[in-house]
Image: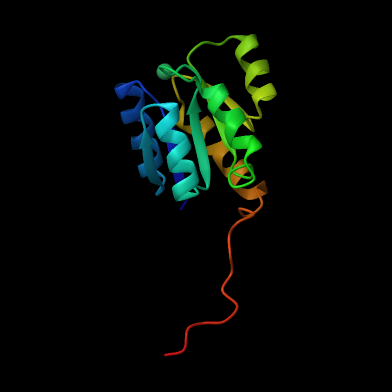
Length: 137
Ligand code: MN
């Protein structure tokens, strides 16, 4: 089970994505724009981020670049979601620091496969603190 931040402005896509994630037992943090996504990423430290590229205002690639430049969020894997099968989008997403790239509409097998891979290889967040001792009871 992972905590997954989904940054997606299209309600139908958000619904589908949430359904797929919930079906796999994940917790979904929804954000409808980049600004909300950035705040949730900092506050909630999700295990993974699904980032729509085309968002109103700041786009998903600009938001990714900010997250990857911040030590507090740089270790969180980000999967770029593109509505268009454009090679330029894939290259731009890699340049921005995205760890993977998926073309919408989402196919559950591809989503689960990419997520499993990223959740396995990703190191724990740098700011995750491990308690030195258990609380005395
Ligand atoms: Mn969009």
